[in-house]
Image 1 (tube, rainbow, N blue to C red):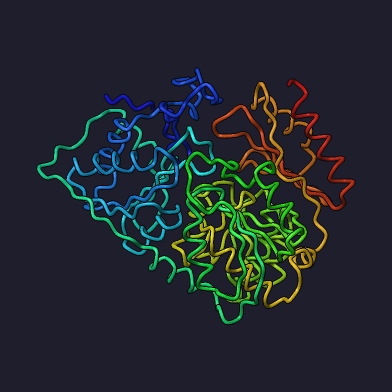
Image 2 (cartoon, one colour):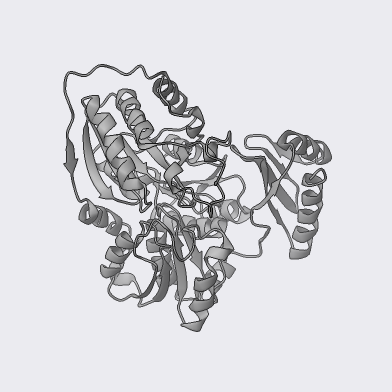
Amino acid sequence: MTAVNPKVFRTYDIRALVPELVDESSVYFGKVGDADSYQAPLTPEGVEEIGRGLADFFGETMVAIGYDARISSPEWSAALARGMNRQGVDVLDIGLATTDMVYFASGKFNLPAVEITASHCTKELNGMKIVRAGANVVGRGSGMEDLADLVISGKFKQSNSIGKVIKRDIMDEYMAHLMQFVDVSKIKPFKILADAGNGVGGAPARKLFSLIPQLKVTELYFEPDGTFPNHEANPFERENIEEIIHRIPLEGADFGVAWDGDADRCFFLDEKGEPLPGDFVTTLVARHFLKITPGASIVYDLRASRAVKDWVEKLGGTAIAERVGHSYIKRTMRAQNAVFGGEVSGHYYFRDHYYADNGYIPLLAILQILSEADVKMSELVSSLGNYYISGEINSTVPSTEAVMDRIKTKFADGAQDFRDGISVEYTDWHFNVRPSANDPVVRLNLEASSQLNMERRRDEILALIRQDS
């Protein structure tokens, strides 16, 4: 058996603690080896074992590997490649890359692929996002359990050959791919603030902006730095976007955009510095793609505002609700040949990007939408109509099961859906409460017909959720 802790294998990815990065200033200090999956340690030796397991799991002659800006990522990438090479498998090393670049490589070259990343998490963590050839996701229910069993058993195939590492810079190919999604001649000369959070997204963003010269872009933290010295690479937490919120109106920008650590998610702000909810961005981008592909199917996560379904159906498309999580969204998109999918969390998926998520295509879509509408970003959002949402609210609770039971009983008179936690529909309001896959946390998303009703219902449900806390 290997020394790899089975808890590093999670629902959607591999995630682990890098022990040598834990010091007295870390929230993980003294917790190495704790039962929490976020705190299960993984060494380069363990990464090499995972590389061997992945080589056997994929059963292919070559695997693509990319890595993010984290301090540990280059070492982990090399260790993963060593493990694959030991099994006789060649590695296409695309180097420092965003997760969506790895998905692109997987689709374009028809290779299984791995991105070394812990996405938006703190510097002490790292992990892997894994796809089969064609950017087909590996997660719980789609191979992650088999991979975990293989690695933990340590029963790897014996190989009579040693694989090699082939380095390839795919940036230009990736840019050509992105530019298929936009007509540059129709983009107006916007002023943009863009924050890469010292993650890996700065280099592709800079290259992309250079191909649209009419844009005037102020770069914030485009240089990769795995210590994340300015703020965590998670723009979905308000504390990490305070600077861009302040600077957008001060500098007269038309809007702002920010990416998470591996740049597969993007976050938008209007010209006032007001953050835009992911379900409203989903609605705007859905409208754009329905204009290009009339009658298409759009997949959205069941937490989302009714704005998504309302507008998709209004424009003649088919709106398909799916449970939260990229593996579920991608599976349904493939099955329905959906042109676009979106999640509240800022993941946006595209049929012509191998049904995978991408952090730059939404930006290109927003640029074209704003140019055609010739209005400010806030006016574009206002054009969706009146939808009053709570945003996602997390609560740490003693028992997620007890919370779910209380919700089910209390709101038994509503139309209930149990695909992902509990969703309850009423005529003038609806909500979803779902437990975290990894922590004693439940997440509430709620929408109502007025701000007053939203706040009243939100507070009512939060009180029920937190009554034992």
